[in-house]
Image 1 (cartoon, rainbow, N blue to C red):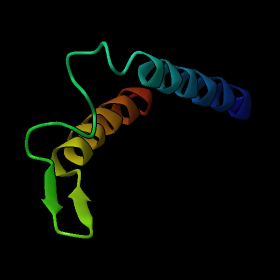
Image 2: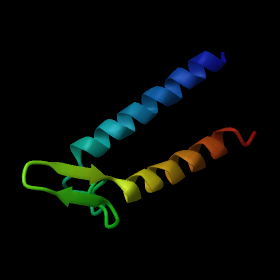
Image 3: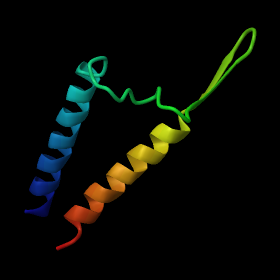
Length: 71
């Protein structure tokens, strides 16, 4: 019974992520291009650290997991 519920939730999460990717250009918040994300450009390379994006996604995921395990 729990595996079925987990698969439904995982599917819903994947659908939501897919919709975010499809509508990514129209959203006011562009993940990966937030203020605080670090981009260092050299002559032949680019070093990118999505620091703010990782913190925001971690907070959202923590909130979602806390809501599901609250029971």
